[in-house]
Length: 296
Image (cartoon, rainbow, N blue to C red; front, top):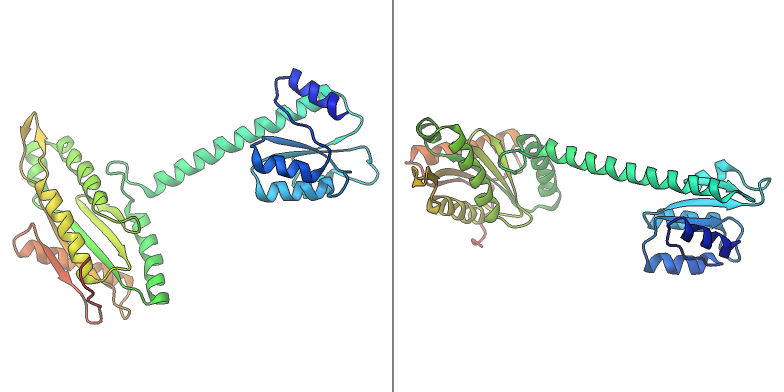
């Protein structure tokens, strides 16, 4: 039956490998990727039900169980073990082919559903223009980072970044050119960060950056790196250099005695202090109990 089934699957357009024990099947599964495993429940050594449990737990494969002992094994038992279908022997090969194609179709539908869900998840957390995370995700992530900071007593810093005189730029060159600036600034900010850092478009022309395990002095170095990189950038409008773009950045380190709202307000105040001091600069509000490690 094993040889006959293998021949039928090959004729039907599938590549298949037939083995006579669960242990041999597992070794093949570890070495090769398969879409579906057809398993007889009654096997020497490990049973088909046991093999199904292992396959479903460790691999992205579907299982079709088969048995000639209908009185001893039920459809419910097969499904509970993780199988996608259950076939009673003897069976017609044409019927098995229909079941295989149904399982493959459901696999593809599940893949497509997962792709859509992943895309929707990304859209829900990402700003479409700058490709940075959006403000909704900022609040969620900041909450997680603050909890981690309190748990492990590691420093945490926050940057608030605002484009200087951006309304004038938009009025002079138009909002489409302004959007190009926003998109490019998103790229520049990301390029100045470590993998553990995360950047967000907070709203309008404001950006935020969360710097885990980073004290105020270190955060100031990062802020200066971002500020200098943006100042050096040349923006073109109709093949001619446009107005220079600069940013004002506020730096704060989280204090264990404050709420997240106050942490954000301090960062915002620090950024406005930078503007009051003449723009295109970094202002730091380390807080009363902030650490002050050496700059990286």
